[in-house]
Structures are given as structure tokens and as C-alpha cells.
Image 1 (cartoon, rainbow, N blue to C red):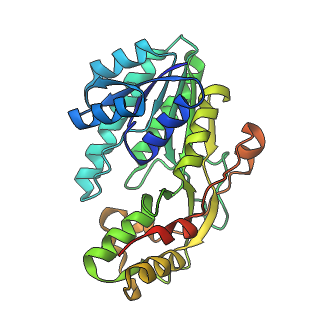
Image 2 (cartoon, rainbow, N blue to C red):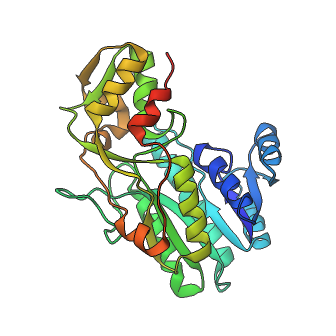
Image 3 (spheres, helix red, strand yellow):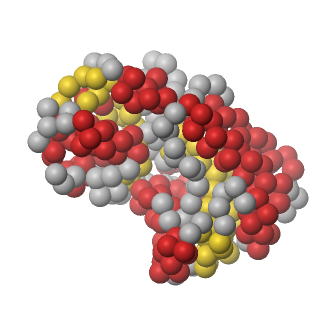
Length: 293
């Protein structure tokens, strides 16, 4: 397939582009800067200059492609307004991509987070949350899945709290960044809450499998580790950075505080069985050993 990818130079996107190219696909990747365009070309893909807010560019990319993988997100969690702006931008982009593909039976693979289900690990059958700081993302992805009835082979790969590679990425990466800045490797509450995780290279395989195989309207869990306790994550970070490990207020994490404090393990049993996906790379706690002071 000739695949249009948004977010193709990020931690996850660069792995997805490499996975696609390594399995016989060609890639047209959205590039919002000269540096991004050079990175896309260096990876062996074709850049399409534009940003996620450039809806005409998105239409053009989707029109040229046999399928679309959407990964781009502003990732600005500095304030509630910044989060809302990022969610609104992504929602408009997804609506645009979906409308361009209506009636074509081409695949549109988007991403979301694994849902939080009190008392147990969430599964692929659980609905996405549509309230809270990033509830708009859940509403946008749910709308994309609804395009299955309009001739789009739409699917969603749900990502865990940490998608990691070489000790960086995701919520664990944010904990590391905050630890470097504050001098404390912190965790919210008592730290017994569990966060799921996956290596970026394993997640990339699942995006390719969803593109190639998944039926319309389906959701999949890119979960390698069902749930590590956050205090265990903070302990590795503290040891690698030679910093004390302590509980800190959820307010430390700004708008994401309530999410950081929640116990939210997730299962990928159905994904593994149905798509034959099997994570092969380092677990989160193993990968965090790559953190350097």
C-alpha cells in the first residue's frame, strides 16, 4: 500500500514508518518543518509539507493514499486550555481524513489511549472515555470508528500510558523529565496504581497489522506490559538519576494529575489472538535502565 502517515517523525511515528517500509509499503508522511521533511526523506519516505491544522493538505494526503495512519498530536499538556486546543485540532484533522475516505473501503487507522476501568484491566471491548481532560479524543475516535458504516475501514490502536524506546517516551518519560527538573523522582499518591506500557517497535508492528488486516470498526490494544506500579517506575528513574524517590501531589502533573493518579491496567489478549501480534522488545522497567544521568 501507499500509506499517508501523520506524526511520522515522532517516537511512535518513526517506528511505524520504518515498519511499513520494511514490509513492502511506501509512505507519504506529513512534515511540518524543513527538519521534519529531511527526517522523512532520510527514513526513505516522501514528505508532504504541512501541519495537522492544514486541512486541505490532509485531504490531499489521504486522496493520494491507499490507506492512512494518524499519529500526530500537539502533546501540549501545560494547561487545560492547551490540552483543549490540541484535542480540538486533532478532532478536526480526524474528521477531515475520515470524510476524504468515505465510500472508498480504504483503511484509516487512528490511535487513542487504553481506557480506565475501575477494579480490572481494560479490554478491547471497553468503550473509550468521553469526559475528563482528554475526553474529546475519545469522542473523535469513536466518530472515526462509526465511519465503518460509510465505507471506511476505520480502526483504532489504543496505546498505553507509556510507549517507550531507549528509556524515553510516554508517562514514564514525563516522570523522568520532572525528576530531572525538580531533583525528586516522584509518583502520585501511594504509587500502587498501575500503568500499562509497550515498546515503540512493538506498537509499530500492531499499527501495520491493523492497516493490513483489521476489520472496520474495531479497536486493538498495543499493550506489552499490563501494568507496572508507578512507584516501581519511579524507583528505576530515581536510581538511574541518583535522586530520591518520593510521593508528590497529583498537582505536580498539571492537567494530567487525575490521570496520573488512576490505576489503569490494560489487557491485549484479544489483540494477540486475533491479529497474531506478539511483543518482542524490552519491557518498560528493562528499557528504563537506558536512562542516563
